[in-house]
Length: 216
Image (tube, rainbow, N blue to C red; front, side, top):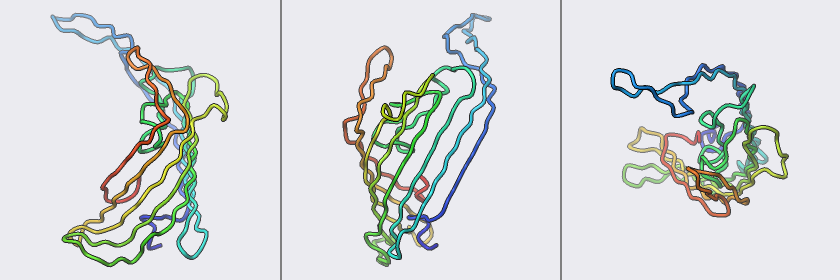
């Protein structure tokens, strides 16, 4: 499919199970050995289960698509320190919230997006750049991360946003993908950072990037 780089159609499913053997100095304890501070590590061994399901559905011959994604992860067993948490915000998740705003030993994120072409077969050159096509999309997210019991979907965080994708080639050789993204978190999130209460959400966040593809 010639537009699969910028507007994919199809399905991609990843199911992963990991078992980790970690050492972490979560207590901040040290001992002095030969005049050197040596951290005292605690052992953390646990399993993770993760699911990432992407569904891209073409809805007409004009290259409009509906894109859905479900991503979930869980640390199996007893609760472990926040260092090992899942995070559902940021550029690779719910863009309406900063990356570390929403974290926990369990997490889920559901994403729904409508994408359509703005300009195809541009066939125009600007210096070393060859411009090919431009797509845009609008989307909505819902997700959360937590420890202990799940509080329900009504307590989950929600967000909306829009994105522009520009596909081009650089210097006749390198695939070049440019994106501009804006997102808004519909809910307020309170978290404690270094004993200070920090609020996220209820604000616009902006992203831009230059990559080889649109894998983000």
